[in-house]
Image 1 (cartoon, rainbow, N blue to C red):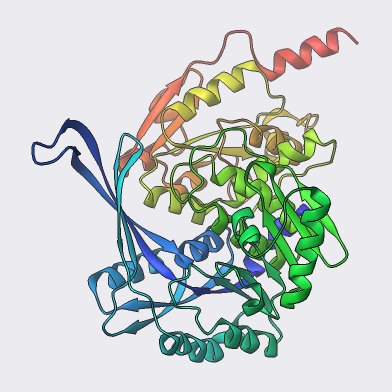
Image 2: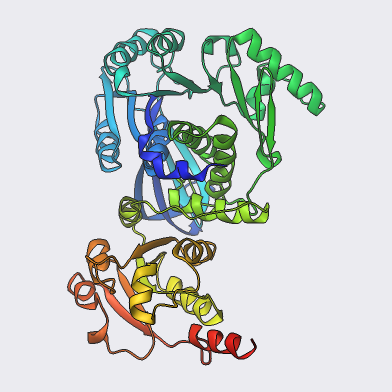
Length: 481
């Protein structure tokens, strides 16, 4: 697998077209049954609005660093305006078409103690005429993108999808479809379709044996005039099937929390990886990893390049393959986490030889917040600080080991001549909520502490585990030579 492509995610230019909607959540506690009816009373404490449907697909592409546009239909109402504001905050270039007489589609959920109490749907089906408005917009913006992703939720926005696919193919674009119709022929000309197992069976696919599945999938592709199918198979993983090849990937999730939006993550990741230059087999392999991350979270979740990098590192190492941690600008992803209300913890160090003291220290640091950023001295910085014979392990290897820890969310190198050997500049750029330092320090002596305190954050000093240090390990190793 060519993981160098992860450095080119921002090269992916993706246009998402489909049924956009707002996901609204009322969250609160339940303590009694209503005297009016045998239903629980939820005392609402929090209201959350999120991009849903095709808008969630676009959000997944954006969080993977892809350049993404979005075409969809909304009503002339407050919900549509709310959705547009959310999309703008998510770096999604949306061109939503406002129609009269129909509402913006909204799914409204009441949640208590991580359980959905009830869902309220606000929706009407858009017409073929409405869909053709999207086709006209598609013709105007198609040249700005390389990939067109159709996200079909069967709400009418893609009633004219055959005409839209024809427009995209005439412009030389790669087309992917997340289908809802059991008639795959309406997706004629698509390069990829991504049905789940139920959709596959409704379309006529057979699952009584692996051979029957493959043969029926190829017949469906041939009859529909589609090049390839990524069949998502729940706990059985997913299969990439074309007219001549088949590749299967086992499910990579160990604990499922919520499958909501997993299909959105799969097709968004597949498209972004293709846009970054990966071959289809590798792109699907990465999409499979992304699906495992997404379903381990609550709600319709997104996946960041750093999460993918961490899981891919573990996955490749377990399979005996080489892994080199990629470094790209993670500031946008940290900003996404902040907007979601997550507390960012920062710490730094050389971490030349990872030992028990480091592991305990990083776990304690992570426990203080929601996401942990580790600033990692680069090789030149360590040589200046520790001497010409250091580091023992180069930057890529140190980053790979750190990234594999469950406590670590992001690793960011620092220590260029312009930055100096302290993370002060990096801390100023990130503005973490909590700055953690290990050792016998006064707060006034810690690089970046002044900035964190000035922005309302806090600074914590943790004790190191007695007897654990890289220097001691090196001395012991030299003594036994």
